[in-house]
Length: 602
Image (cartoon, rainbow, N blue to C red; front, top):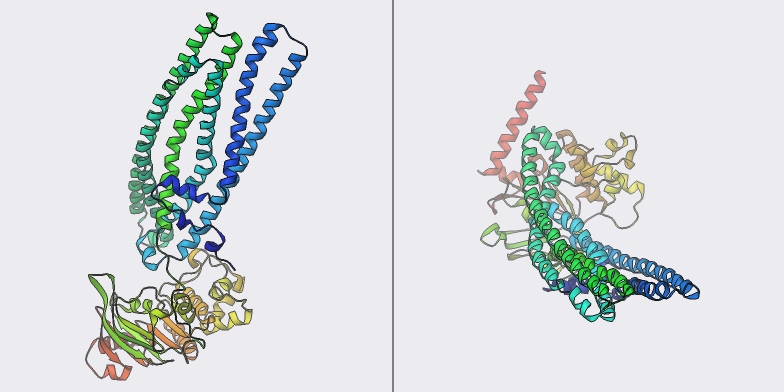
């Protein structure tokens, strides 16, 4: 099956420092449609001009000459035919332009969505979701309007000017030149406003993205807002951001408010000048009444389209700015999922060796420092340490969400960087500390990580192993229960167990459990540990946990502090030495003893 990037135009190839050239490249495959649309609009414009010229003939020859027979009939049919021609080609031009715009935008949306899935973890970590949504929706729609309205109408107006100016030259050359005297001024004013409004619009879009991010974060964290009674604080924060957007929007509106009256005044002055001179020429007999009648229609189709060209030039700025914002996103390098020269024919065994591994998100602040250890296939490695000590970062290196900045990681004796990321991630199952569930049924969420068709008994087997099957069966719809956005209708423990079931269904060779029992009670945790113990057989497993009961049976326990391993060994060997592990064990044991005493008293 072809991917989006194979099916549609690779929009990365349309990127250009010249934004108009970039927009032209985006039309690849639809340029003939667009040129046909422009041609149709040109024919419609010619029909309109011929209608005014026919009006001049009607006044001078038919009415003036008293020819009310066949000439009157033919003139009437001419008006009807030209009207039909104008309407037909206007429709065809609009339809072709809409076809082009909608198809380009559809392909661009598909490409951008696919592109976002393939960008690096680092990119998503440094860019707000609201900003990406803004570029994928509002800016995308501005690009659509550019193709459907602004660009095609700019071409239409240019054709109108050429056709109608040619008609004016035919009517009277002197009058023609007088009628376009202020057109260069109108275009010059429009170009000046174009530069100003482009900057103002870009600033407005940036603030609109910030507002979208604020709203998105607020709605995602509405339970936290309510729990801490921070509605007033959130309202003030939103009002502050909204006020800034209002200021930038007002600046944009003021610039438009200045632009329209000024260009209207210039266009009206041009039109009045032409009509005044033309009327004088008609009175003096220098041109006929029919010629003046034709002139009044033709000159209007020069002046007011030129006025609209000014509007379009200003509106085009929004399309160009939005194109730049979308291209900034597309310009980002994709994660090379298939890059790697090692594809083991018989799968992986799961032997992992860390050799003096160092990693830093920022080059001057390493998160992991000289980490070295090894584990055999099927062993369980537990990672302990305070928040920020580097545990999650370490397991993120295994599926190559990030690559090491120093040292090496060997998987079955082969450098991890030789494995394609796509292949690695198919072999690794991950349950995060904060699992994400989609707004779908429980069954769909559990089956999400498997491409092939999954039978119901396989779903239930994975759910039972994760100690969630019995809970699911208490729901009225069972496995077909919708979990709501981000799994909001499930408890924290139910979400984690559903995520565990999703991972286990994949039957991965390597398991990563990132504090996956943190949101369940001790009884459920014991059930999950019992179920997981069988599934972890013959699978290399990394466990990040804060409860020592979850790691006591691990083959290797690594204690981290500030990105370094400060203790290593089994549960028994670590208890026999002074250090962080024994301190945590004593604290947790004391707490559990006190809780048990309180329960006995009750």
